[in-house]
Length: 87
Image (tube, rainbow, N blue to C red; front, side, top):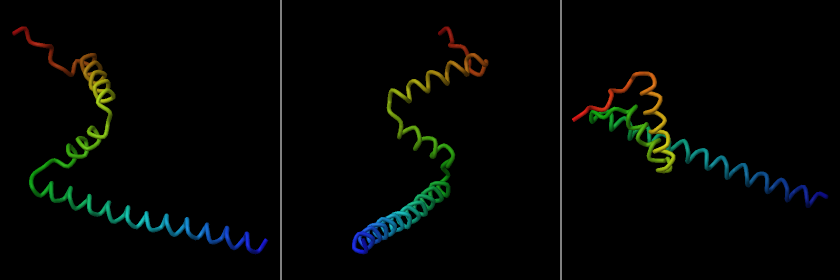
């Protein structure tokens, strides 16, 4: 049993160390992303809108179209959209 315990401990240690390395890399990447947003803000871009664009670009095109349609429907129902003009 001692050999099996040793193997299990080694595996557990390896998993923990891999996770810790990934967490460190994740923190470094998050810091890099924060710097990019700060740079964009320094150049006059709206960070809130940039974050929204990033979120939208991650979505599937069909999912995005469905959400946009629902948003339009809800806004129209609440009187938040102008009626289409009769050009």
